[in-house]
Image 1 (cartoon, rainbow, N blue to C red):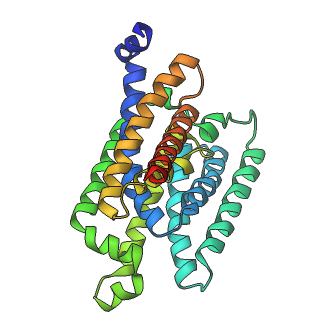
Image 2: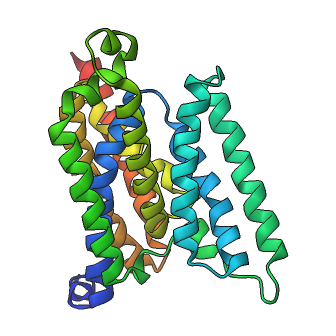
Amino acid sequence: MENLLSLFEYQFFQNALLAAILTSLLAAMTGTYIVSRKIVFISGGITHASFGGIGMAYYFGVNPFLGAVVFAISTALGIEWIATKGKVREDSAIAILWSLGMALGIIFVFLTPGYTPNLMSFLFGSILSVGTADLWILSAVLIMTTGFFILFFRPIVYTAFDPEFSKTRGVPVALVRNIMAILIALAIVLSIRTMGIILVLSLFTIPQNTAFLFSGNFKPIIFGSAIFGVTGSLIGLLVASWLNIPGGAAIIFVLTLQFLLIKGIKLLVSQKK
């Protein structure tokens, strides 16, 4: 126990803990919007499509996260445009851009001259290597997202549940959806740093579905997602340090276990009634 508590004295663990908390709070807001709109796989589509930006960035000698941001935002806006203007179903648009991004990433990584870059940190995350600059960027995006949710909470909820009715009430549905697409893209790219491309989908869905067990309303789900996300992240980091396993994977495992335990308890309680 003392060894686990001593981890809090180290800067790298403090950074990892702060990154997990900030990422969980960011995912609580954007993830609730994603789950409410029933477009869960948009996070997977944006994440995997951003791999194309990572591959191209390596090829042209640019910061890979910059390439991921550009591709993620382009993909998010592309999904919205294809689904509305291109008359293509949203899930089909996600699948098209998902596969295109992955294909471009593989091609450009293969074409990169010299040593092939190590992509493990992008695929599985590297939360213990998060630096001060990463925390500042996470904080800035979190503040920006929180501000948008506070100022435009009702339009966000309206467009998530009933966009057609929202249009009749004068809500700028396209603008709100495009801004949310950009915020989702930024949240997902920043989460790649902690969770990795393969695991990041879970961060935007598991805490939200856990919170949904207690309430079906948008605002309580956000707060519940934040609580479950932060709690799961803290326990996951401690478990990862104790068992010497990857932090991102441990966090997702704890979040899943948390959901299953709460779901099981609620089922037992309902059966006794």
